Image (cartoon, rainbow, N blue to C red):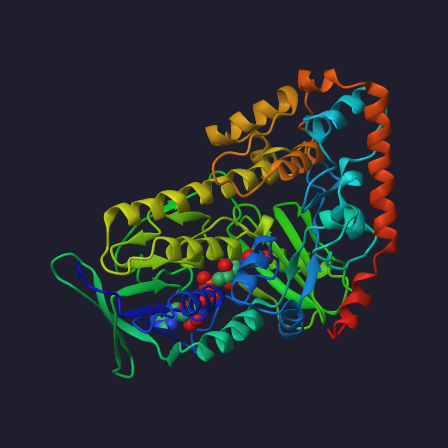
Length: 501
Ligand code: FAD
């Protein structure tokens, strides 16, 4: 296969991962040489969950030239300004993890350091009062900032909630218009080259053979190519992320949708609440060592705010990642490449990031080990960063009311995370390393929200005049409130762009 132009890319799977890959590759490999075929089976279907995203998805859609309002209308989408966490640090507590920054740095000192210093002098509001996204979210307000916005409104960073199946359909239309061929059928066998195991073709149950040079495995949890064919191996992360089941159900929406996700900790896991245009998405993620399927379903239904609109759907998973995301001529994306946990809505982002890296390292003429190794190293790093940030939510708790929380609170965490917790606990320091996804705001929000409160602040903060800093901080808070006050209500904005609510 070496020294071969890649003429045919075969994508296996038509879930969100498969159609995101098909759309992006059709946009970037539009060179008259490379054909793209996507194989999917309606009978097998897709995972059918996955509704919340993070801000980089805006870049993905823009890269494809997708109009935001068309996308929102087509996917039942709403806007998301962050996540409200309820009962995580302790029962009866809540905090907000917003997109975008907290406040402004002053004199070269990080805002959160000045906030920590102020907190030692007087009683302060929660740090989310200094986040444009959090203030707008809690007021139920939203409008995207115009590119020329002058005020604090330009700090309003956002993502989306949407129906992932409708997003996949939307991207299917885009990809097919760009020449992607869709083949309906179930893969029955996979042909490999005897000398090195490279995949050469998919054989479908109806007898069709789909041959290709590069295969993108988007077949979901089973990893039909990456695992069932190439036996790549899977790193199991359940010792840190013990939830292994979920039950999901949509419910009727009572009133306009909130512009944020809510994640409420429960006895053996947590529950999501994701407002879409026409329904609420709900699900309970739990650990089967501590809760049965029946009890999880009862708990989920008990906490619904509106009537259920379908039968609850049960799913099983193993948190972790594939030992290699790219093995031989197979690149795994989406659930086929791993699953951290939906707590910080990162799965679709991991798909997007995998596609971007594949395009950047695309093996157009030959498979080079250096490119494959680089891809695997970058994906490893990204998965581990996300993993550590998600583990933080389980570890940093005072809860001891159930055996599940007792286990999470007392577990050993990866050394990479322990170092970050120790640095934050000492002087509130956060260093964004390499290509890390979660920035300072995220670490500060979760650490402070879950009782990792530094003993001191950075000495550099003491160089600034206390009174002037106090005044500036107070002014910022008032500015955020004033800007949020002028924004339209999220529901009104959705109606304004022709989205149903
Ligand atoms: P799937 O949707 O499972 O698609 C697999 C595809 O492979 C299907 O088209 C299927 O037909 C095809 N296939 C499989 N075998 C064969 C075969 N033999 N022949 C032919 N075709 C085959 N992500 C987020 O970003 N935000 C969230 O809020 C979020 N919440 C989640 C909650 C839960 C409980 C879970 C489990 C996941 C969540 N995710 C979330 C992840 C998200 O759902 C997935 O990352 C995303 O939908 C991509 O799935 P996929 O395309 O990899 O797999």
